Image (cartoon, rainbow, N blue to C red; front, side):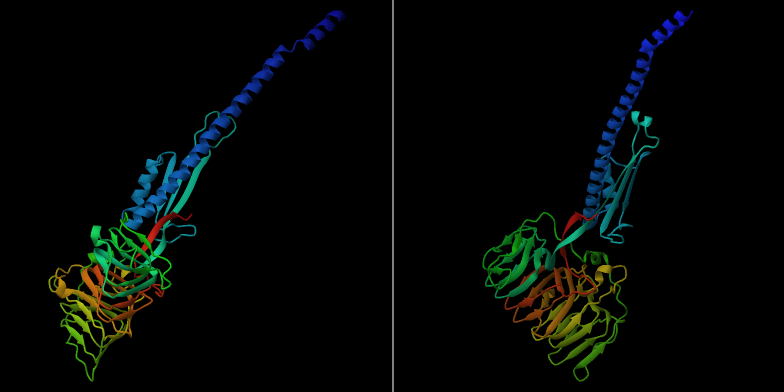
Length: 432
């Protein structure tokens, strides 16, 4: 009996086949689990990368749409969808402008895109109870590359005669097509940082065209530009001015007159050589009336609007003898149009009488300072004769712009404080 028990014990100790099978089964389960976890992790990593790419592209597309005046939120969502992410049971796409968080919070020119997607679990569920979530956030905004002092909207920019145009710290631009781009001819002298046009730039690389008076470097010239420059005052083209009732005619007492806003000026105004006209702060409507300045004109925080019947809208003639100081307002004076901050002179976009008789003439005298934006979207603007306008905050935007004769013009937008009445070249970039 004792011998039998001993044999049984020896057999039990030597026979380990069942234990090995159990051990191998456990190891196989663990190996399978780790393989599943590795496979799932690869899928998760790829999903995270895709989410980052989709958010970046959606934010860039949204910011570009915002620049062009399109529906930024719709474009950003559509871009995310095209890259595999749209709102679903496991996916959330959020698009905001302006962003609510981060360094661009409150920036109305920025677009924020947030994407999240809950990942699926296969064999990794053996080790993980809750599935991970792929998350990505991107913010894009337009970055100002160059400030523009002079922009022709469609009729071209012509620099000719013996004119001098000095815009060393900003660019000259034209949205005209073909030969209606930029033309430099005659003995004109041009000093500019850049020459930009959607059309041709004729003689822009020759003549007296340089970045400064050292004459060592030509301006950066971009012709046949793919996209037109953004018109900073474009919103005003949808505005229909509602001038108040006509006030009394302006009369000069001992060669001086001071007027206040609140009533329309319904008769043409001439500031004679020995006259001084002072404008109190506010917005002034000249209804079917011209403004001619040969003497002195003063006004701080003013906007002058040439309006009235479409075929009778008046124009502006600033002669070479003119002097004084006119400054646009630092806050908008036109309700619902924030772009009117800084607007100094505006001729109604509805004007149909845009022939040679209604050209805008800006031939300021040596002591005339103009500060702000001048907007003539359907008008031809002519600067000629022996004139001189100098300003550190003046942008000129018109349909057709011509500098000729002996016009001597120094323009810059570096001195604009509190408003930005000028166009810019902008590049959309990821900022967060």
